[in-house]
Each structure stands twice: as structure tokens, then as C-alpha cells.
Image 1 (cartoon, helix red, strand yellow):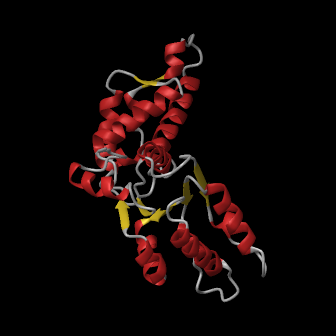
Image 2 (cartoon, one colour):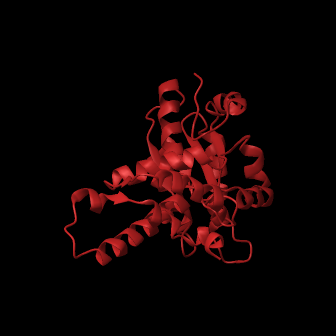
Length: 253
């Protein structure tokens, strides 16, 4: 089976097909990418391919695995693993398991239990360790056992301009809003400019930009409250709602 997940390019399809048969994966995400959607998709595909018995996903973070005192970590970690058997265990922001600066931290104990189970139960459990690429690289370098145990690392790239625009369309549709005449073109220009600036976070930045545009729309409609507002007025963004962003500030300077 050949699959494509979250914008992985054709050149990477072969790697993905091989990785789907693995029992341990490393997912390297960029800010603002859908970290939960991808593992759910992988769990479903692995189940269809017969690599896992149940195909369910157990998503956890450090707090679900690491205890706060001696003897607390092992039962917490083993209980999570018990729930995950037959499916996929997804550990989000896995690098937080390892805190070398804290000598009394119990994250290393959880890692050792995971390594043991990943080796002894590899036919009944798939483990996905996920997080931002730079931190995950450091995490694997600091834990040679994990690095050697997880052979397949999948990098999820940034969304492209057209994909971000499509995300904006979907977000507005879910909220029962729409772009008015010329507004979608204005947002496309906004994305072009914003992509050239620092700290862009993919879908998260798109959502935040639309939230701010809706606030500007609300202020604009409040200023026009003397006239009767229609349903279309209330649900439509106009180009000025987008162009009022400071991303366009250089044009008015």
C-alpha cells in the first residue's frame, strides 16, 4: 500500500511505506502542524495492513508516564503501555522525558521501561515519539538506546502557500464565515508576506490571523451599527479586515 500523509512528497513515499511496517517511529514536526491527526492516520493504516491487532491510538505526554516520587513512574508507564498493546502509543513532545539537569527526575526510568517493552513486545505495539525536529534531534543524541532502537524518522515539512490558503478556507467554513469579494486574494497576499517573516507557525498562524480578522470585522460592524446588518454582513470578511494587519504596515508607512 502506498500512502501519503500530511504533505509528504512523492520522493518520501517509499520511506513512508517502509516505515509503516516498523514497530517504532520518530515524527519530527514543525510548529503549527497537526500532531494528532498524523498518528491517528498511521494507526488506522497499520491496522488495515495487519501490523497491529486493534489499531487504536493511545496519546500521552510526559505527565502520563513519569511519576513524582520513587516507585511512582514504573506503574504509571506500565499502565499506559498496557492500554496501548495491540495498537499505537503516541508520545507527544517526547524530549520532555529526558531532563538531565534534574538529578532527581524520573524520566530516564520511563525511557528504560519503554526501551524494554519496545524490544520484547515489538510484534504487539508500535511506538511513535514525536516533537519539534531540533529538540527531537537533541533528545535522540542524548539517548543512544532510543536512537538505535528507532530506525525510521519522518520529517513533516512546512505547509506550502496554497495549502495554507486551503486551511484558511476550511477554518472559516467550520466557523460559518467566508471570504468576501477580493478578501481571499488579500489573505493570499498576507500569507506571502507573513511567510517571509520570523516565527511563522503554519496552521496555528493561519488560525490566529483569521481570529484577528474577525475581531476587526466585529469592530467595523459595530461602527456601522446604525444600519441594519444582514446575516451575510455578519459572516463575511472583507479585504480591509485582512489588510489592516500590521503585515501590510510597510505599505502605509
